[in-house]
Every structure is written in C-alpha cells, then in structure tokens.
Length: 28
Image (cartoon, rainbow, N blue to C red):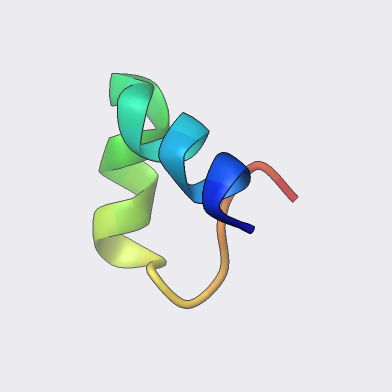
C-alpha cells in the first residue's frame, strides 16, 4: 500500500490527478 502511494506521490504527472482524486489512485 505504501509503495503504491509513494510512487504516485513521487510522479508529478500522477500528483496532479491525486489532488482531484485522492480517494482513488490513477495508477489502478
């Protein structure tokens, strides 16, 4: 769980999506 969140947070491209969709990660 931590690994997936950390990866998404590290990637700027995913970071933008996380801001709007923090409940569900764009990776999955």
